[in-house]
Amino acid sequence: MFDIERWQEIFETISKNKLRTFLTGLSVASGIFILVILLGIGEGMRNGISREFEQDAANVMYVYTGVTSKEYKGLNPGRQITMKNDDYGYISSKYNDELEYKSSIYRIWSGLVNYKTESGSYRVEGVWPDYQFLENASMTNGRYINYTDQENFEKVVVIGNKVKTDLFKNGENPIGEYLQISNINFKVIGVFTDPGGEREETRVFLPLSTAQLVFGGGNEIRNLSFTLEKKDNFKEALAESEQFTAEVSTYLKEKHTIAPDDISAVNINNSLENAKRFYDLMDMIKFFFWGVGICTIIAGVVGVSNIMLIIVKERTKEIGIRKALGAEPVSIIVMVLHESIFITTIAGFVGLIFSLALLEFIGPMIETQYITNPSINFAVALSTVFILILAGAIAGFFPAWRAARIKPIVALRDE
Image (cartoon, rainbow, N blue to C red; front, side, top):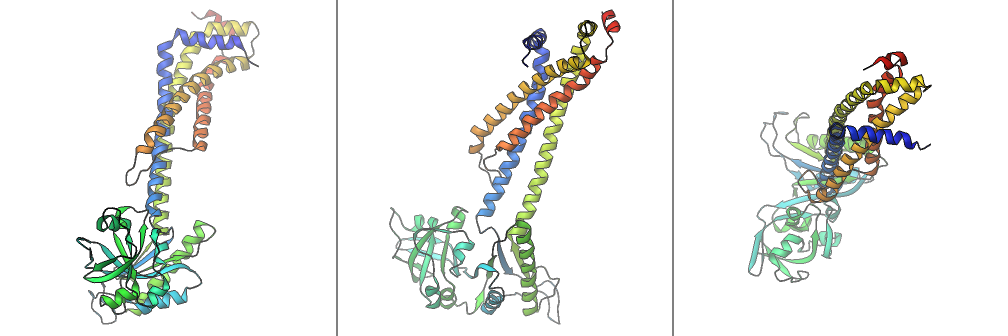
């Protein structure tokens, strides 16, 4: 039931000690403000990391080779390992039922591209049609490479949006036009965009078979790229991808006579493993932020508790009179708790509103490599509200308990 007299008492006490109440509330408001901002930054870091992983397929694995670092079976270290078409064929065939997308890659190092009077040096790669999905590329014009292009050694290319703007000026439509790669004509059949931005859009793709034939690659490939079929949960997907990478690594090392413990000759970049490490780190950072914020709030709660002890001391005689007139101890506790919860809740809401406003207006403008749009969701906001109420109750409980134990005769003697 709403007790107007109790509210009048609270406001009267606050009005008599404006500065003290303001400073006490400021400590609580700053604690909530710091907690929410830290949690917002943590969420922004998670958003930034998620954006980095969105550049490619979520569960993509890249296989690339290097130089052996150990002697093995009479072969000296320092051998350059180069994968072949049959490596890709064996893995694709063996794991066909488990693979979602797959492609081998042949990179052309002298990627000088010309169109009329314009030219530029870009990353030129021969790939399979699935590579579009491995890279999360979206077509803005035309089409991607298909299996007919691959089988017929077609001299066609798909160019990134940045390549288009560099070479095709004044909004010229590149589809059907011919550009030159190392002075060899290729027909443009599509333009793609990539969530990775301009860096990923400075690439030119052509059928793998054409790249190997035209640029003297023989049956050599530079990289392999795979994604596995999606699973119901992250843990299951991670376990399957780890098993797949281990088996692929073992096969390539046996095939190319590489020591089993040679970590430099065959490397597999597993995005799920990387994601797990990053998200585990994010969880630790978020836990740390919660800890810092809670400690800040505790400091504010201690301040509120000390103030309430002072208030109880100042009102000792009043409390004694109340008890002498028949007031129950529980009513004294509720009276003190009411004031404590009111101060901490109002101050906390001020800190919460200011922090949410800051994240709302400033957050969308924050775009760094690993922090994107820091914000907090509704559930976290509710959690901070619960913390406010709990903090007020804790701050007022011990002073309230002390007030309830005051004996009337002792209180009436107090000066």
